Image (cartoon, rainbow, N blue to C red; front, side, top):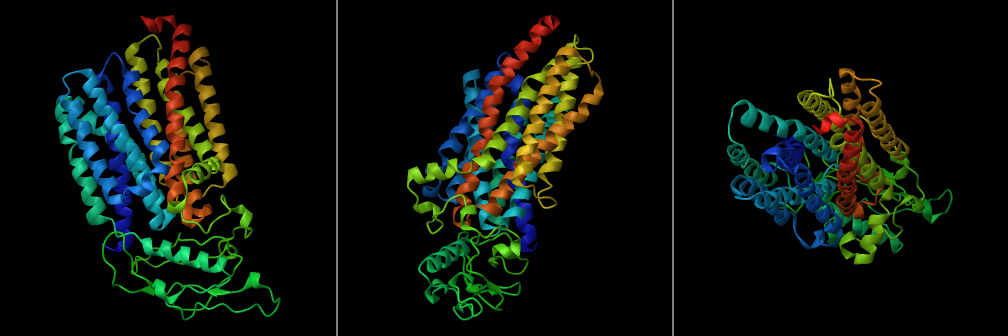
Length: 481
């Protein structure tokens, strides 16, 4: 298996496994606590919210290996605690373990994507998480509902996910190119000091990296710097997951000093995993002005930031986090609120359950399709904001349908599918935009920090869903029977 293919398979499977635990818990919510399903949903969200809220302040202190091991341990702990919990409180603790695992795994893997071809890695990760909804519900449906296995047996068999998680991370995922980021920092620092060369003691060949004055304008601003071209190779001496070979630069095609972004989007290649191409703004079609950056002090690495700087940089990610929060709020408010009060006829509890199951299947299919589209289409920031607005309109649409029944048939499954398409598209495009637009030295930090947006939206939606459902049930008194 080539390095590129291994990377693709690894990120897709990590996304699938990470979110499957949450889905299995939600699918079995009635088995855990039939009288307090809402409490199950709360326990499945709140711990993940805490992890993502605090992640920017401690992730740099804990290695990826340690975090991935914790994720695997929490997976098994969740299954065992729910399966063998003698009281509902123990089972809810197991659900909380699953939520903690999901939040830690998602934030860590999103950040991990920054060490690879970011757009491809984020798309494969997103696609895997999108398929987790289908896989998780299928796991419970096949084993528990169709084959008649107990919910305990269903959970115990699911422990294979924790073993698979560690195997994929350690044995399938290629070593990350951490040294490339260090070399980027060296280049940025040298530019800030008025020099363009990477020092030889950083492991980068200095020949071919010298700068020449622009003779036509005499301006230092347009001083060309050569970069590794498509044929650059890497020495093969490094070992270990966090290591990476050093560059052996070739070619002399230039990158200008005005290039404010040092991009790793095309870092991976089939033959040289650590190869990194530094592309300028003009080559990528992006603005060259430094004020485009979210943070003006690009010379500082994320791990060197104080907690106040971490907070400010997280807040500066609002153009990406707000759409994530809003789109998740709208779609989960539909799932927990409006879709529970629709059925044909609405007076039949089984009919309402059939529509709820069908609507969620259509939603999950839409999520999977759109989360897999990151390599086919890249939304702009305005489009990223447009999609949550459309999702809010869908929430209003389903609410009016549930109240007035003005369009009341199975044709409603079409907008359920659209709901999934919009939600998945916002997820993958928000993170791929971050990978393209945020300073590479802050990219790892930013991808983890921005993951807070979706969990905030889900938390708000759980509260709103209870209120929406209560109001709709009052409009249809028969539902209370």
